[in-house]
Length: 276
Picture 1 (cartoon, rainbow, N blue to C red):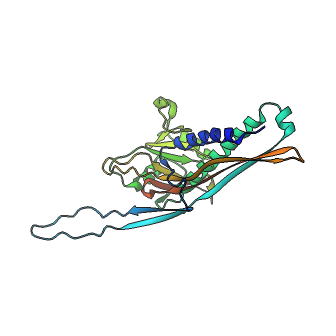
Picture 2: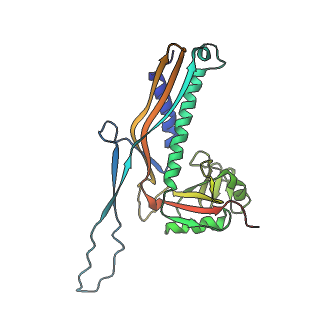
Picture 3: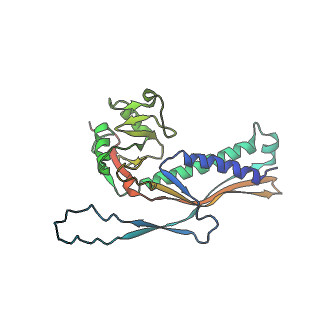
C-alpha cells in the first residue's frame, strides 16, 4: 500500500531544492559512506597585512596558524500514522499528503538549523531603537568591507511594517522582482530582506542575522557562511500494525548545519517596539 522506495526520492528532491535556494549554504556530502559521526573543520588564521621594510632590514616572520571546529552529526525525524480507512476512504490523497507534509517538516527543520547556526556568529551589533536604515548600515559596517557586497538579512514578520515605513526601503516589485532568495520582499542598505517566523523576540529584542552572499573582490573568499554536512540522505521506513490496521511512515536524515565562516555574518539586535 505504501512504498518507501518511491517516497524517499520525492522527499529528498524537495529538501534539496530548499537548501539550494539558500545561496550562502553549501551541502557537503563527503561524510556519506564514511565511518564516524564527527567532522573536524580546519581553518587558517589570517597572517595580517604586509608591512613596510627599510632597505637592508630583514622582514619580520609570521607563523602560519590554524584552528579547528568539531561538529557532531545528529538525526532528525518525523513520523505519521495512517489507518487503512484513511487510505481507502479518505478524501483526497492521504499518502501523497503524508509525503508532502514530511517534506515540509524536514525542510522547515533544516532551515531552522541554518538560521540557528547564523545566530551563533560572534560578530554582533546592538541598536537601541527599532529596525531602520541607519541601524542596518551601522551593523553592515561591522564587516569592515572595502566594497559593499550583496547581502541577505532575516527579520521577524513583526518587523516588516517598520521596514516598509522606512523611506529607504525598496520593495521587490520596484526592482523588477530581481530576487535571489525565496521569500525576499525588498532591499534596504543593499541587504535583501527575508521575513522568517524563526526570528522571535527575546527580552524585547529581535536578533537578526545579516549574511554576505558574495565574497569581496579583494579577498575572493568563497568559503560558505553555513555548511550542511550530510551524513545520510532522507531515509523513509514503514511499520505495519496488523491488529489496528495502521501503518507508521517515518522519515529521518543525518546531518548538521554549522557556521563555517563567521566573518560573513553579523547578528544585529533591534528593539521590538519603538521607545515612546
